[in-house]
Amino acid sequence: MYIVKRFSFWQQWLFYSSILFALFGIVFAVYGDNPLFRYYNDSLATIFWNQDKLSGSSESFRKFIWAPLGGTIACCYILLAWIARYPFLKKEKWAWWATATAFTTWIIIDSTVSLYYGVYFQVWLINAFSFLVKALPLAFTYKDFFGKR
Image 1 (tube, rainbow, N blue to C red):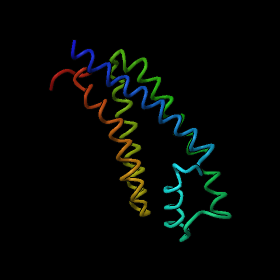
Image 2: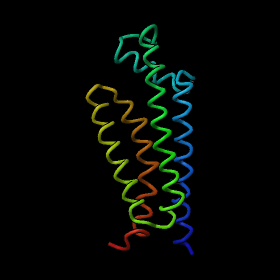
Image 3: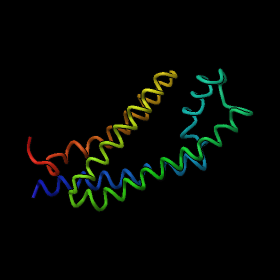
């Protein structure tokens, strides 16, 4: 009984956190200059443009680039929500591997580029948080998919 509840908890965690991250992507795309993203935007202004705040062409670029980035975030997490909802729930091994592979690829590329450009807060705030949210259900459901090691 405990094993079933534990798996169900982590499967639902993966599903609902993916829905929340997809909503975040939509908000990021259409309202990327809201108070929740102020620190992020202001930090990028300092790192890349030596400004306290984005303005002029740098603000126009931010408005543009946040739209496809937010759309991509939403797309990836909607896809993950569907994977979590159906094949992950059925404990199809490919669903576990697809999730693990996609997030490993993202974390390596995103963190490497962020560190290269000195956008350290991206790694410590965004990537570390996202990694934990997605790694926990993968770690706690591993035995459900692959048995004991």
